[in-house]
Amino acid sequence: MRANWHRAAVLVLVAGLLGCGGSIEGSNAPDGATTTIPCSAMVACACLEASDRCVVRTEACWCPSECDSQIVCICGGGKFLGCDNRPPPD
Image (cartoon, rainbow, N blue to C red):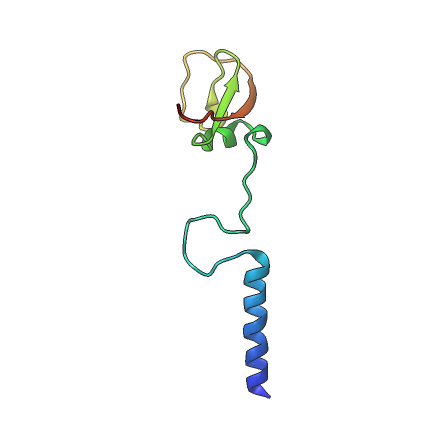
């Protein structure tokens, strides 16, 4: 009876990993459970953090000090307008 319980537990664990798209490897690579928010749905700070794939669209003199209090700007008062996909390199 104990062997059947062990087999059932292993089966549930494997099914859970496969069902969730997860991985037991310690990798930083995205797996099936990872979702990526589109740039157009991001707020200012998230857009700045995703600068590898997104570009911040702002009015003149927008200052990202709301994202980091250590940022000092020469001018301020511009508005964050949106976040766009970064164009592919030429």
